[in-house]
Amino acid sequence: MAGVEKRSFDSPDETREPGKTRSDIVHLGGTTAARLTLEPGWSWSASVKPVVGPSSACTGTSACFSQGACVSCTPTAPSS
Image (cartoon, rainbow, N blue to C red; front, side, top):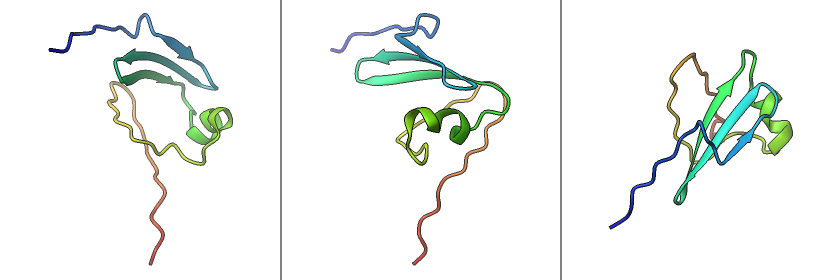
């Protein structure tokens, strides 16, 4: 039987602060969870892309928002 692990974003394993972003990260077994705090005017292309480099933020990601609003734009599939 697997054990229970309790973690808190108040004591993250790591904190990253690229432009207009604060990311508190905790590791839970084989999973990583992050709490993001995004300032007004935040955008992936201006705040994160210069740091991490990929052309989009598309990954296997789940999200839960507790305050504010989020607009997500994903690349469209090539037309046939």
